Amino acid sequence: MYFVGIDIGTSSISGVAYTAESREIESVTIPNDAGIPSTKRWERAQNPMRILEIVRTMIDDFSVRYTAIQGIGITGQMHGMLYVNREGDAISPLYTWQDGRANLRYKTGMTYSAFLSESTGHAVPAGFGLATHFYNCRNGLVPDGIGKICTIMDFVVMKLVGQQVPVTDYSNGAGLGLFDVERLNFDHAGLAKVGIDSGLLPELAESTVSRGHYRDIPVYMAVGDNQAAFLGSVSQLKQSIHVTVGTSSQVSVFSDKYMKIPGVETRPFPGGGYMLVGAALCGGQAFAMLRTFFEETVAKFSASPTEGIDFYQIMTSVAYKDDSFDLPIVETLFDGTRSAPDKRGHIENISTHNFTPDNLIIGLLKGICRELYQFYQALPEEVRSAKSVLVGSGNALKRNPVLCRAFEEQFKTALIFSPYDEEAAFGACLNAIAGSASTFVN
Image (tube, rainbow, N blue to C red; front, side, top):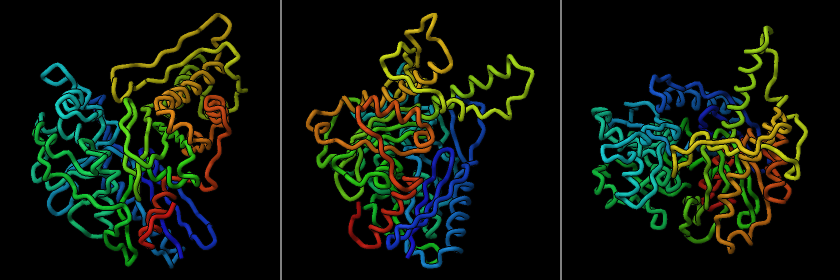
């Protein structure tokens, strides 16, 4: 008896087929080539129909090889949004979580995001679906014939089961913004205050609800990728600190009760409880940026082609140096933060003897860790004192032993990984298993 989980990531789409009886798992990852080029430097969009095509192909391929699939779970990149008409067809691109239009200046002198936050009391950073929608409303960019706003995961689930109206779970609903996390509902008063029609928002449902069937296989509600990665990585729910590094990066812990902590997001957790999350905009993207810098530098000063050079392999093979060494200090805020989008990264403590490629690599990786650790330190002592296990996920972390060493040094404990690859897809798979059993599994 197999279950399938799919993770619709920003740069790749992953799938797993898993059987609980033998705990065997197969995973596959392919590039997400749905990106739509734009002349606007702040715009980040993808083709939702191409994403749907990739997901369908992946599920169909699993179905050929595993004929006893009992359920399908979906997760993916949170916060982004697209518009669908009353027939459930996409009438816009997917505006991803990296879309920066809400960081542009509004007529009040504030950004669109800042105006929303001040008017409603909710932090609604750029990239959150309702910040993107608010900008579109004010600039005449909402398409005609709109029926609903939805996430890419909810769109895919809706299309797989042949429905016309998207439904979202609490984790993805909160990811759109203007959501009362404590009461698990959209803030309708806040929406009205800024002129957003709450009738455009998807209905809410529990994460383990089945939405219908794809070729006779039950398809369950989509969950946010942060929650799914936690589910797919952590075996000790209440004792674990979860760090994940992909394009962005997050540090997450579970909490039984709702908490409001400055600078930290409180997100609904499937099955009950909450996740306290520190989210950085640059994770693996910061390392990719440094890799591009090295590649362009080599190309600039060498007549030889760079195609045969594996820059990542070289960069992840440098000898680690702990904090006792005099290293450059790198702040990796290259895309700002959600609360301060105009902030930028910087490098300091450069001397005549420590400005070397190896030291810059190590300094940048320590900077990625330091940003997440600062979020963790903002948690109350009562929360931190119960955490003793550091669990990692994300390919940008798993494939970088130097980054793993940096996390272990920063958190002063060993870093462990789930025995399974593609943790977010596996977490979506576990959500489907929980749905099939009508009980939550962790």
